[in-house]
Image (cartoon, rainbow, N blue to C red; front, side, top):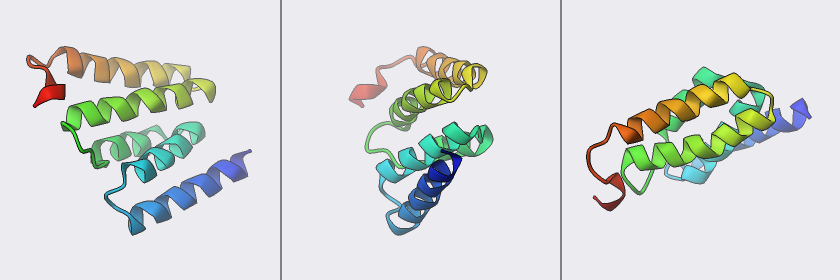
Length: 100
């Protein structure tokens, strides 16, 4: 299983190099990093991924998807920290970022 996840990470990184504006490639790489428990690298990926919407909305959407990956991979504490961090950021926003 780890070999498949490493292959996915390699594929996604190559995709990011070839298609740097593709948020899908960033999400695939993030999934692999989450499964491998490489949290600092996953966090950097979330903050650098391109998003067509407000960055906070795009980052929160990606964090929500990766939260599930972390949980099913046994990284429960890390998943809670990730989702709580983005929930706090969204709650701290005074305006509706989805309609800017």
